[in-house]
Figure 1 (cartoon, each protein chain N blue to C red):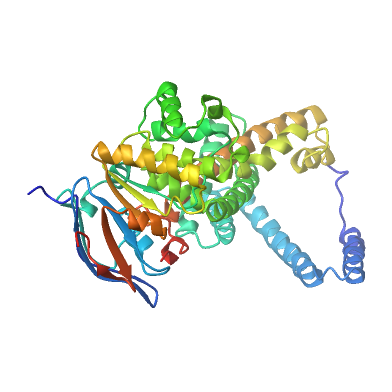
Figure 2 (tube, chains in turn purple, red; figure 1 turned 45 degrees about the horizontal axis):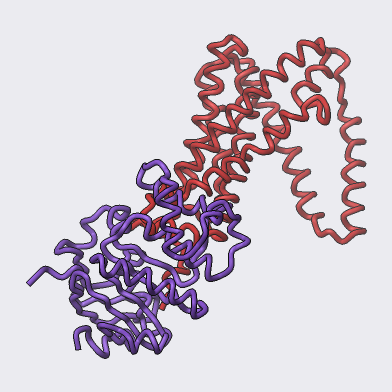
Length: 218
Length: 260
């Protein structure tokens, strides 16, 4: 049996007086496609943010590829475990500024061909590269943000309700792109409220009041 | 120099100017009269004390005493810059380091170049000018950083989530803060002689110095302040921005922690 990509043991998270996560224990296999559902405030986004190291748990251990999260340099870890926000913010002035950033943080020269291919994968035209970000629609912004996360293929994609508020066509484009990454071996964990996404889930984990209600694999 | 006479009577008459300002304040209900009175009293006391202290320091002409006076100026400037930091951890130490480095490097270069001599009558006033300009620049830079880290929080979080290191996640905020800190000095350099006749130059001309020589000094002061504010702002900003993060490379502010 292969080592799980995430091994989460006794995870707790407290914010002030609020105990948001209580004793979460779960293993997530390499290449899994796990959908995380639950009511608002149940702790599912917090769980995802802890996996992304954007929050530090109050107690418990998260192992990534068999090693404790804390042993990885944070930038290296976050480039491999890529977190996508529900309402992303684009940087700078144009779409180009956003797609240059992943190259800059890796000390690489901007590869325009790669960026254009990535835009094409979410059905955005090449002319959009130099379009001011203030002219983009919500769906276009979300797709540019997703491309920004996926220009360099991560091992894990953490999706925090990224299709919420998108129209049906844009949802379809986003789902197809994520599916293609999943098929290429990327582990995908997505938080959602969308009943159709929950119904179509390969693997479902429900969180309620900071506890796992339905564990993965069941 | 004999034409430079401000008698106590003349100063007393100048109080009328303060009374005019106070009257306007009261009539327009601006509410600054208390601060104005405190400001006037403090200015009179502080300047009188420093006048006697400077007279003594110039008279005895000891290196250690000059150094002590410079140190006091830098310490007070750092205390004041710290007040603008609005909770940035270790802001006093950062400000002290930034202002001390800016002041000492600038003075050292001026002394090496022969532009000023290491005498209290030159070193103390020049240190005051440098430290106060660096203090204002650093204060503005702190305010800019606080505002940007608050308003652009989501953008910083996204940069971190993409795998940026702290410098990459903060670069745009730090650049903006340094620009903001240096802006008054640069604006003043652009308009010097056209809009303003700066205090030092005016003072020298008042005191009977040939205006061309006074202008040479002013050019030196302009260059000196550009160097000092840039050194001070850069050091303060680069030491301060990591304080917005914790050891797990997360933003310290609490809004992310409210995620459910």
